[in-house]
Image: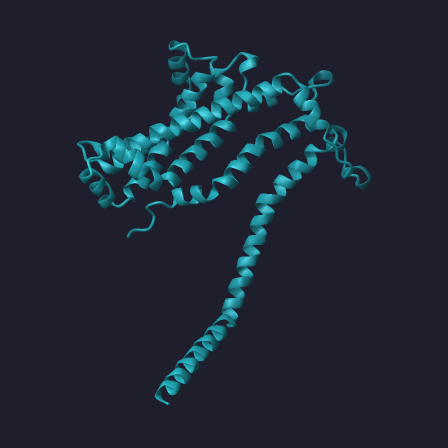
Length: 304
């Protein structure tokens, strides 16, 4: 009998808790919060998705439709002719390949260097570490356009102008401070006990980095690689400055040269198609690495 009473009491308590929870969820302020969340999501959808959809729609319209006044009779007559014509131009596929080579090389080189530097700043204590790291952070506030001339002179002295390798080194140098900041934060958020255990087992710094710490800082590495790739894939001024041979142009520079027709008129259909092609790797990579990207940016933000 006592057991039955206890069971009945627990059931009543659970029922009361559920009822209280339902009552709490049905409060007016909670309904307002849900409405605000839905409105914010809808606004974000409009801000981020609509421009992409508009660019895709325009890229599938003839140039005459793009430049003419909106007409319902022709506005939705879509074709892949712009993409076909764009890829038939000899310089465009080569420019896409150049952009892929430079962007992937920048992402890999920046990630490797930033990981090594972040490991040093985040796990070792040495004289001048804070000053050196602070100096790296200061460089984040200096736009590369302000030092473009000395960078050009330096690359020219090393015979690295008109070279995809030189452009890759330039992009890696520009993106390295942010990568070091992210990786230092990622390493600093890893518990020190793991490194102590690896040292007890006889693992050296390199083995500890590659076997113990590396799996834990993958979000930071993904953030660094994604940031470096996107920054170099869409960069225009540096490529225009350091490259003069047409066969070495990257995609942003090659798209600038898409002036066709009489008197140098611009074919906006080809430009729209080129813009969509340039967006595809950015969207795919960001969606694929989004969870790592968010985790990498928030690494170390919460203590404990």
